[in-house]
Image 1 (cartoon, one colour):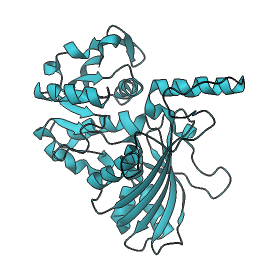
Image 2: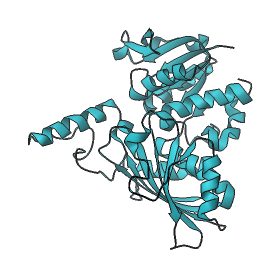
Image 3: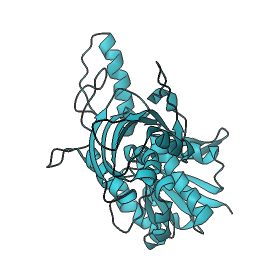
Length: 338
């Protein structure tokens, strides 16, 4: 069976990646529609190597003939148009933050909690988690199954692509400006991102955490286990694509490095690349274009009774966004009668 598919936000970084991945994975597409805002209507985007799609205006688009729509247009846009699409009978898989913490809308990483999809028909909307949460939970799930996680302390090193194309352009232009000794005021980030790191992603909340840090905590609890405590520090770094995370995990039960290696090596979506030698670990540029979450530098944390540390990297525009959304649809087709 083929499905009529719409990609909403098709001219953005994630929307273009969705179109690429739908083609790469031979998703059973009948008709395919590229949809975006009025200012992008009429532009062309690629679907595969041989096909070009003309972008249609979201405000005028009819979702009644669409089976599944992948949304990535920004939270305020999804808030308005995702329910309209769902009401028209279209399944919406939304990549924005708007629906994630709505109690009766599934928030899904297929390798972690595919069972949550059983209730998708209630609203006909499924939420895609935050990019930094996704890669961490892909790595944590097999360890949680093994020894039950009590607490996670994570520091992220997140690429500028997580803030969109304009953020990537800002890193590029600021980098050039530094080399010719020109001052360039930041437009996207609160401080210069070139040759710098910025310990702020999203807005600050009353307790001093940023919203990105809050997302990692509450999404982990909704997806994996409500009893896991999470402390996050989220940092933007001058990397174009690929997020990295330093993760410290405290378990309720004993766990050895060998047990952890074995569980991770067998886990879906996880790639273990860990040699205790110079360069024996993965870095963000090396994971770009790959679907896996790479785990490196796994070692015991001797400061707590049952603790491990590890480093993980993933392509934030693929597994952290577009790929995860498409895997949700594939899971529905395979196991949930969609």
